[in-house]
Length: 285
Image 1 (tube, rainbow, N blue to C red):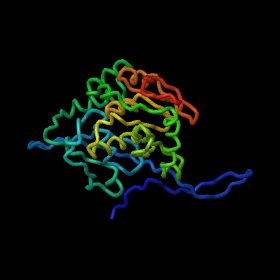
Image 2 (cartoon, helix red, strand yellow):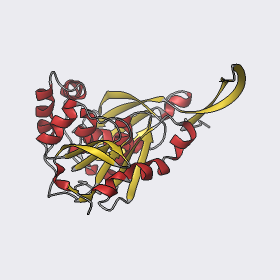
Image 3 (tube, rainbow, N blue to C red):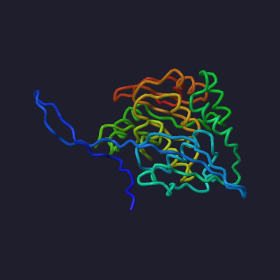
Image 4 (cartoon, rainbow, N blue to C red):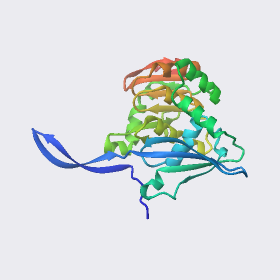
């Protein structure tokens, strides 16, 4: 029987207190590679490519893969995913570190083109302008509708709600989180991972597989800073309002402005910075 990689790993270490070494045990967030393979079966010889390898925290792997394929513009909907499965003809723990995705027969791709396009988009193109143009090619559009109108006080309370729900972070202190909220500040879903982008892919994948897309009336909050990649994935999911605990990058701001998204950074209990489209924020009375 093959044991799946756990979300946490126990390690022995030494702690310095009052200048003395003390042997103790600690719990760390597990980091393992996940290889994503894509396969098409349309009556011809199956065509399979090794698309990507990402370092992730084990758990919610199928959601991670589904969200990744969707936010990278490789599949347009959950209907495009005929089957997601672990590759079991591998030794030991590797069986749960390789996932094969069988695409629906209606999905057409050229393996060489897909590899080339993925390499270009995942490396953010050759410049900021090229990155934004690549999003349009992927099918990214401004969020549908006006999006939620959220009170400033509600937004200030999101960080506490996110932190309280981060069970693995409470054990390890070493995971990022992506949380989906409604306009009243209620936490609808949360995913954790060693990578911010993986946490978001897991979150989007969960909603995609549940048939709940686009996320046009939701608020996304991510721990840490907000990068272009986070904004890209949020835009593909139709999320109109993104909140980060840390700073946004310049290209993240450009993306928010180009696609009509509200972007908030440096969230604190007493305030935050608004870098794009403040119209979705309702001032407190």
